Image 1 (tube, rainbow, N blue to C red):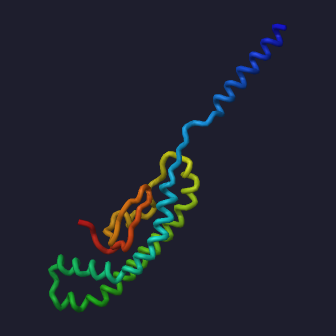
Image 2 (tube, rainbow, N blue to C red):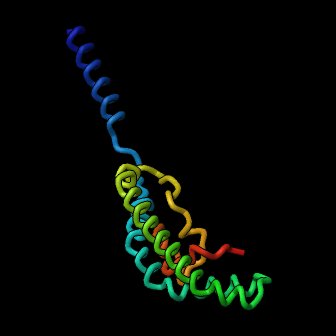
Length: 150
């Protein structure tokens, strides 16, 4: 009888401890990396679509800030426009690639409390035609990859 009572008590204690260890904790999820990845991929084409405006704006401020002669500014305007448009397109392509590379890790960090920093921070650090954080999702439209922030 004592042996049965002891084995039942031991079983109850074991099940209680197992139940306490398996009980769910507070729910936490951080979808900011997934949101950042998808918004980066979705809004990257706007960098290329708005490239004529952003490149001309960057060139204007570059010409105003430089003390070069008027002849040099005129001679380098067209090649500069072509070169800076290519840099903007390359920046948008890197932005898409970085967004794609963040999707798989974002699936793993979704059920954690925090997510790592972005892989490609140029769109967050540069000026943009429109820049807003909507919750954890950064919305950057028409990024100026060529202009140094002041």
